[in-house]
Image (cartoon, rainbow, N blue to C red; front, side):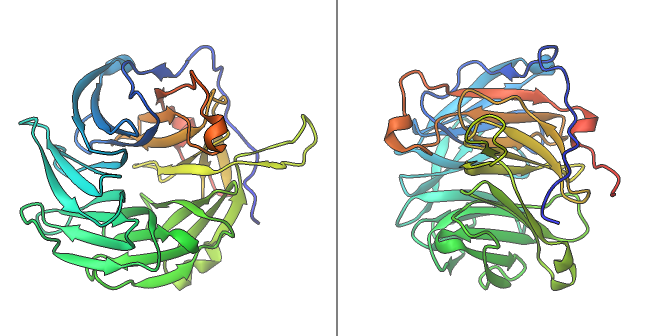
Length: 350
C-alpha cells in the first residue's frame, strides 16, 4: 500500500548529461523558482544574494541580474506577470526586484527570518510571507503594512500556494490548510501524517482533487488530499534511504527530503534529498518514473520551468551533517535537466 512500484525508466546517463550552469552563488543555494512567463530562473543563496539567469536553447545560460539581502536568502518566487521577483530572508525582510528597472525595494517585514514567500494570484496580486515569528502575513505591494496576518501554531518551515489552496508546514509537525478566499482563518489544521520534522509541503498541480505532498527529515513522503471524500487516496512511502553496507537491503541510512516539485502539466512530481539523489514519481499509479545518478552532494532545491520541459536543481551543502560536513571545496552547483516525456508523463494505473 505504502510503496511505489520499482519500475524505473533509466536512460544512458553518459549520452545526455545534465548541464552545469555558469556563475553559481558563492554559498549554499536555498531556493529557486522559474518565471511563469519565460525561461528565467531566480536563485536564492546563503551568500545574501538573489541571482537571475536566462536559460536559452540547448541549456546555455546567462546571468541577467543580481540583488542583495542583509542576510541569507531563504525563499524566492515570481509574480504572475513575470516582471517582479520576490524574496525573503534571514534579515526578517521580503524584497522585490523589478526586472524592467533593475531596482529593489523592501516590501515586507517580520520579527524573525522569513522562511517562505509565495505569490497569491488574487485581487491585483498579493505576497504571502511565512516567518519563524509564527505568522503568515499578506501584503499588497503598494502598502507598507500587511493587509492581513495569521498566527500560526509554530514557526513556519515551508508553505506553498496553488490558488485558492495554501498549505503551511510549521515546527512541531503542524500543518495548516487555507482556502485563500478566506485567508485569515485556517480551513483545516492537522498533524503531519509523518512522524518526523516537516521539511517541505508542496501543492498538487494538474489535478481535479486538491491536495499536497509532505516531505520529512526521515526519508519519507506523504500524499495528502484536502477533502475527506478523497482520504482513501492518502498514503506515504519511503525514499532517500541507503543500505548501511552494499546489498544489506536494510535501508538503514536515512536522509532528509529537501524539496518536492510538481510538474506543471502532468502533475507528476520530483523529490530530492540529502543523499544527493532525485526521483520522479507518479502519485496516481504509485510508481517511480526516474532515478537520477547520485550527485556529489545534497540536493537542496528543485524547480520545473513553466512548460515542464526543463528541471533545475541545486547541489549544495544543506547542513544535514552539521558543521563537520562543511568541507572545503564542497560542490555548489546549479544544474539543468532536459525532461523527456517518459520521465514525467503519468503511467496508466495498475
